[in-house]
Length: 301
Image (tube, rainbow, N blue to C red; front, side, top):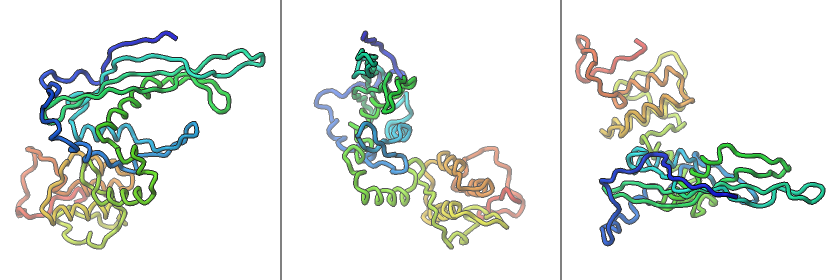
């Protein structure tokens, strides 16, 4: 079958100001810096699969993109992909009719892709192949085509490139086959919180929530609070007691706003915490009698 080839980009070319490291450059000094930051995978963002007798663990592509953005910067600025070529090749037979004539062959979409990234002021790149079945026959004999085959092939190649940098290395090294490893990793992830925000949505209720309410926002009155709300509130109190700041306030606010386990009243109350406030030069002046240590104004008053 005739092959096609084209040059395309999903994110635009990287800046020419950052060029690949010259031979002998101190790239070796970077060593496992990237690998050690991205080798562990959040079990909640994976799923098991069984395809063609092959079992394994699939990692969410969006999760991998988020992790790459954390390390390199926004897609298109700190990292991206460029499609070098693509082709359609014939695979195995789709079947035969009653007279033994070939019905056709599977068609597989293949891509050759370059993933570029900027780290430590230098540009690096990795090239890999990706493939997806475009025309295939399932176990029930149904012949069908996949209209999303191109996107899946690019995703496949991108994941392979990122794996060579250490992304989700624990999955590719087979550690997710060990139930004890996955259980321990879940506990570790929950204790550490979201990799993007440092916040955790633990469902463990605590009586410490009633302490120092003014320092982390007012508590809704006359409602039964969810365990997720109490978990967030306790986490904020820990930040307050240790004199720490939330590293990424917009991301933390977004995490709370999108948490389906919270009521709207709980969400709005949590967002009143001084630790989650976004600086605003247009803030209203303090009311008479309000000192520096006064409790923040509640939306419920």
